[in-house]
Length: 70
Image (cartoon, rainbow, N blue to C red; front, side, top):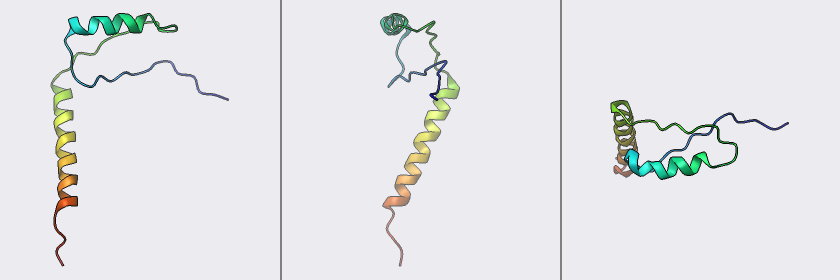
């Protein structure tokens, strides 16, 4: 038996202006089977999550690059 999807999430590589996104939204609405396309406005929570992810990645890189103390 196969799985059935009720939605798909598309993540953009960077925040884009709403007027620039209009073409993408229109194109996605033309795809067969797409009922609606709703953009999500970036906000402070998104920025905080991004900054925390960058911090965590930097900490992990630092751990790998630190010299081994024998």
